[in-house]
Length: 121
Image (cartoon, rainbow, N blue to C red):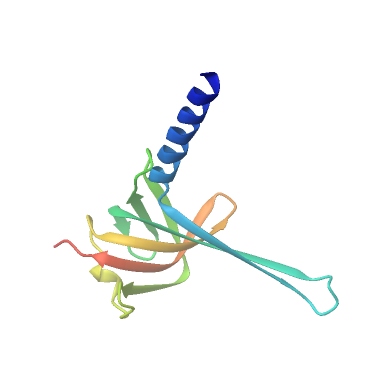
């Protein structure tokens, strides 16, 4: 009986964790020809609704997570539609549905691409 309850609770917990996940990550590692050099790049995407936006500076995104996520912009940011068409940064508005592609540097999440999935006027 204890085993059954343990499995049931573990399964329920995994389901809650999976439901709350709002981002995906991929890591690429390369090794130099001598085998000594290794470069690791981690890119992450997160999806949600824009709650605050300051062009060229910051973006706050409401996701399924309990707290909104705060992002800063990298030096170059690309803004595109979900089909890949490049758009102006001014198309981003509060309540727009977006996916952001970012790189984590220390405590900062630096956005280099914003993919607009739905614009609210």
